[in-house]
Image 1: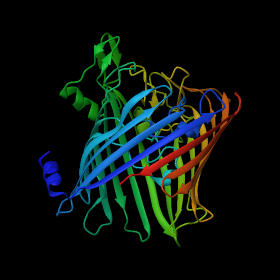
Image 2: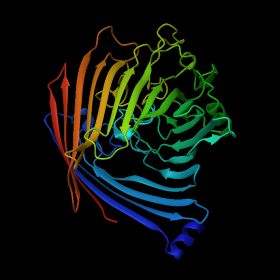
Image 3: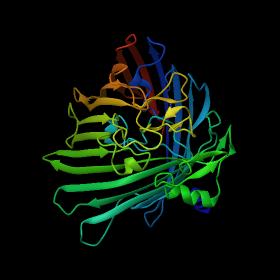
Image 4: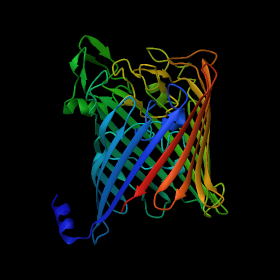
Length: 440
């Protein structure tokens, strides 16, 4: 607070304010998949009107540190017809470290072409959750070895009251090794660990939330075979744990930057041992460093979650991604999937109904006629249900989306069209108009 007051008095704060409004119409009961998915929780399946205003202030210290503050307001109709806080945060960062407290929108990576952004476990599909974050912006390298590491630690505090267990907490940590000794190659490999814990259960009341319980959660008790009791029910440790290994290889050729991406999913010890292979995400991203190309960036991803440790089941059978027997609302926030949006909720938006999938996804961005920036997404997915699924898909869906910036003068105007071709339902087409303005 003292730093903020000092910055205000010095009149050296840089301000940024933007406003966006969007209207959507569609032929089906819900909008097409890519019109409402990965929209940072600003648009849901039933939204026709959405608008948000975001402001940020930045103050740079002489030592290179940067203090930021942000506030955003959001309104959209649909399932949630009310004014909400889109984000609110205070952050401090320097060249290698960042920390913030509050609700902060995550950064978009891979030019917004991925189906799940940075990780298969945490996409841009839901609103940001309030919390505290400490993370390294760049790796810390060990002398001249070409080896380094980067890490993060986060604690989130859900404000939800409309889920099965209310006011849960979410713990997250990550650790990645970096190797760049080989010329023109960077290899990044690591792991993420998430845990939903604490909260108030309608059956058991207040769940364990003390510091000793927190220590059990951060060490992954349920993943390594710990046991405990809630009420009269024995549970496999404390909390709903999930995580995944990641591998990314970055290189370049001519004027192209290339990234190969691999993610796994685990929710128990069998997944940690990779007994659910080949489940995960496989992708390639190519970006042209030369500007204003018709195809500026391209991404292809393949998602497979059909194995689910079926050859090495746990005591309660196969894996059940993003679901949990105690935290019955699963890996969701505000009734939106936190991770990969291809894993979907049931019609009541309560339980995960489709986590056994095969999906192909492609994203393309560039500038049409050197002047009209666009983004195109297309995906095919086959849903096999949940908890093992069936031998044949219960539905096949092709989802497409095109966003074109058609006006860039006083305001930015984007036209959007999305379509779903569904094997079991009627096809659905939607149109969107987005008007945005950077005020200052």
